[in-house]
Image 1 (cartoon, rainbow, N blue to C red):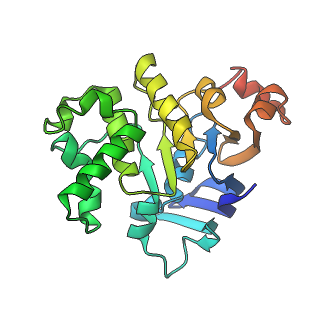
Image 2: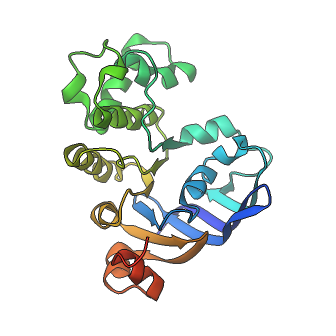
Length: 251
């Protein structure tokens, strides 16, 4: 099992409040890792720490190591903008840019220096296909992205990340406000994407974790309780607290 990301001794603080405690976790390449747990377990903070979005929060402080391809992303010589291209993030609330569907997807590649209209068009089509949105929007790429439904906007945000050709995709409860059909489309696209990308997801419920993930990590109050193959964790959890959470006794 080859690790794409290795987290070693992670502690994370907002001002003096510690929200992640001595976390160690390996995330395998080309798998979907779901991180589950009740509110205030530090899951969003963990995802944001994996591409250094915590840097922009005043008073936030990180300790430990996060290795991506064996290189510590918190080292002084890390190009943070390049890191965020390689480790892209999709947020809970879809955030399309106030421009056309095409320009939403082409925006990142343009910033990266791609000028060719042909290359941009090919990249937009590929990203939308991978996000399972192409067939729904291919005839109206010039309309505002704001006119899309919530589920389409979320798939657009996934396509926007994919257009930058990342290694890792972080997804923070991207289906929490969506209907079952939109959720199913996103889950299907994620399962197809893992052949090319490593995906770390905070699912919007335990059932989603059981459907889409290869491995599951359970966090509680900032501590990693257990981690393993999804079937193992769901069928025979090693910790009673894990069992209580996945069976709905709390959370």
